[in-house]
Amino acid sequence: MAEKKQSFLLEDYIKIIMAKKKPIIIACSITALIGIALFFFVIDPVFFSYGTIRSASTGSSLSGLISSSAIPDIGDLSEIAGSTSTSKELALYENILTSRRSLEALIEKFGMMEENDYTYMQDAIKDFRENIVSIKKDRVAGTMEIGVYNKNPEKAKQMADYLIDELNKINIDLNVQSAKENREFIQGRYDLVKAELSEIEDSLIDYQNRFGIAPDLQVQAAVKADIELEAQIKAEEVKLDLLSKILSPGESEIEAQKEKINLLKQQLEESRTTSFEESNLNTKGSPQIIMNFLRLKRSVEVQNKIMTTLIPLLEKAKIDEKRETPTIVVLDKPFVPERKSKPKRITSIALMTFAVFSFSSLYFILKEKLSGFFAKLRSSI
Image (cartoon, rainbow, N blue to C red; front, top):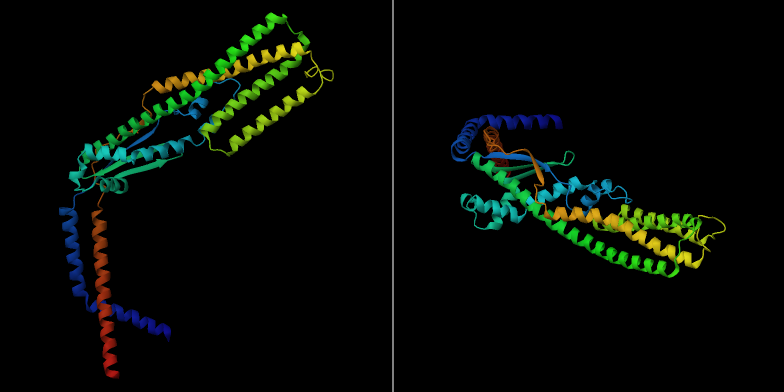
């Protein structure tokens, strides 16, 4: 019974629509004509021009210095330093492009305040971020598509060109500033190590002048392992300092590096606490004069090892600080679009017509049902 009632209601709705088809058709036709007039003669077409870029540099951060420098005895940090560099670079590029600095320069250069009738710069920047500038990132390929919408196809191309140029300019400024900070940090460490090395070398010369000591070959062999081990610990500690500037505290790479240093220190401690008689590879019990000499010599070698680590980093940072070469590569330059991007005329007209058909049909159905309802109500009274 319920199914029959439902079928009757559906047929009833169809009959109502068919009975009122003339005004519905008229309303839809008027809407379609208005849509045609608007989209073909009133609303201007909008064109879209875009270019594709990728990064041209390894960056001037410490991670870039470490991964691009042949640093002896410090290991390869390229995987750590560059594992997320692509996604970080693309995110930085997007922030630069949508920054107030970039968009305000673009709006002022091309007179967009007057063209789009903006009252406030803040409103113009918001509209550009949301509707006019288009940014698409491909994190796998490491590329970015930068596009601009405008009613003038030539202007859309020029604005896209300008955004790419502005991105390169701002990114160069940021890289130079970052390189300067890196150079100052490494320079400070270098100056400190250089002063310590000079002091230790003077102490070693004084000690040799006083005692005339040349430790025997057996003691030298015994402490050689200690010297190399301590030098390795110092190099790993420099590596930890650099990682601390690249990564956030508590990240797995930092914790792993700390664990590595602790294990090396434990191995060194065991070597020093085992008596020389038990093993010629340990130094406990060696003559005090010989040990003092070797400690001084070891300190000189350790400082030299650190200097060897810092010098290529310092030179690379100095070069990066002065370098102003392009930081991005343009894979596809913006072009003058030949076809409009929006509005989609046929689709928009069809949607408008369908909406009017739906509302007008609903209007007549509700009107008919309400008329029947009030008629039954009056007859029952």
